[in-house]
Image (cartoon, rainbow, N blue to C red; front, side, top):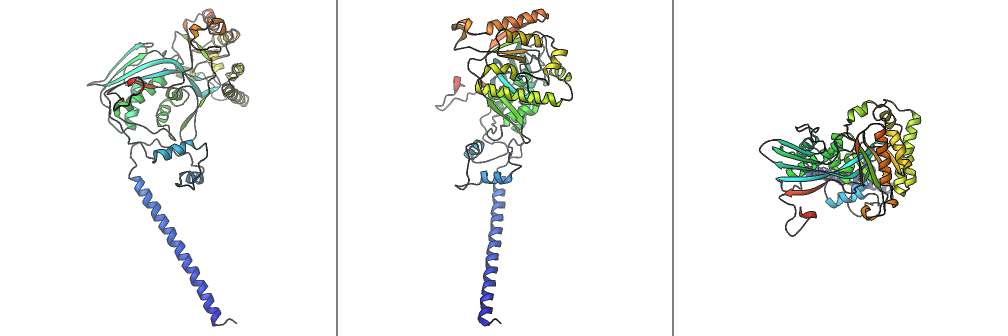
Length: 434
């Protein structure tokens, strides 16, 4: 039997346990109140405007919590560069309120692009050194003028993608769009498979953001890419327009994202541009609704080899890396009879590879050997002239009129080249004194 001393010991133990439980419960409630207070505080900074901030940790909230925990206990690994940038800007808000002064006029340069690159249907594209200038100015009425390539074919009303892009920018800024005057100096062939529509979209968005005096978050969100890709429906053109170079873009289930693939040195582009327009809608209508397992495996392997060849600079493998069974066979047999004969002729003349640019009708060939300014280099060290002649001979055989362009991959994307009032002020001068 237990004595009085034992009963006192038991009572003391029970009391200590109860006190510990009470303290733990109180600490938990205090933590919850602090968390609610924190959420309430941060919500004061959240703007009801459309959000372009995306959370990539939906499937692993534990990783999200670990990365967002402040203090030395949070471990950031080398690949967490986007989270590092989030911490540098110190706050995640719906749309950044770091607005700048609204502008009266802005001129934006945008590059041409070549999408698909064979097997990379709707996901791989590159920027081409061929630029269009778009100027948008405040006005008392709507006006749209065009000069240059495609001036007669391009719409000059609010259906033009430049106007669509400007409207999207003002919507993101949560501002009413004023009357604007548009002028386009078009050097990108219109509706030829060189990304004229994507260039127009991005030019419009950038011009609209500058005029509205608004900036968007990039790191961890790529808000400009989200707006542009949502309008276009895929990232293979708009990503290289924005960032330049060769881009691999996907939708990760939460947002559009893109990464740059390396471009081998000495690469040149030989481009055959037919005189006729190729509508993307027509080029998509000839595609099959289903893909066989064999063709899917073929394209997966070619896309992997294409990226691997670019990473290693192995130009010899590019001719296999750009092979495709998803879209080029249908388009070549039904729309562009010259496609495969021109690809074969270009490769036989020394091209590393050739493929249908975008939805066509343009054919793009890669050549190598360029070093510095090509007009100071011996021509026999390069293959661009021989490849261009071979492609033109095929075009003549099929009775297709067009022109040859020799250019390069451009590693910079869209850029503001003129603005009123200028950004350069207070002792800080930006490129070209813009």
